[in-house]
Amino acid sequence: MTALNQSPAPAVVLVVEDEMLLRMRAVDMVEDAGFTCVEAVDADQALAILESRSDIALLFTDIQMPGQMDGLGLAHAVHDRWPPIKIILVSGQLKLTKTDIPADSHFFGKPLAAAAMIAEIRTMIGHA
Image 1 (cartoon, rainbow, N blue to C red):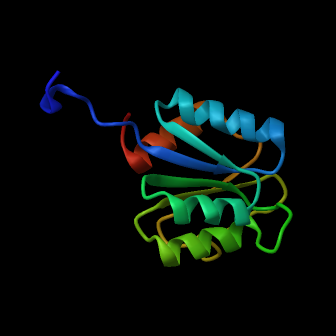
Image 2: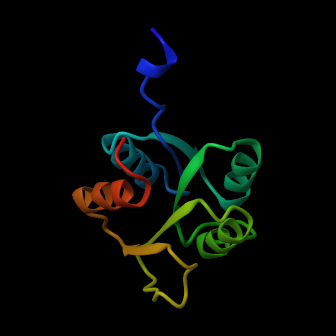
C-alpha cells in the first residue's frame, strides 16, 4: 500500500474526567465520533500528556475535579500554551458563559446528549 492510499490517522481527543463512569461515557462518545481517545483523571495528568504528545486536537474536560487546577483553569492553560487545540468544557453544577471560557471553546451542561456531543466534536475537529 502506498502512502497516498493510506487514510490519515483519526484526530486525538484528550478526555479529562475524574469520575470513572462519566469518563468512560465521554470516551465512548469520542470513539463513536470516529476519533482516538486519550484519558486523564485530572489537570496535572492532562498537562503531562499534552507535554508529551503533539497530536491532541481537542480537549474535552470536566470543570469540577480534584487537584491544584480545575477544568476551567486547565482550559485557559491549554488555550494559552497550545492555541490550536479545540476545547469543550462540561459541568453538571456550573453554568458558564462565553466570557468565562477561552475563545473558540464550547461549554455544555451535564447530562450530555451523546448525539449532540458527537456532532459538536465532529464540527470542531472535522469528521474522522
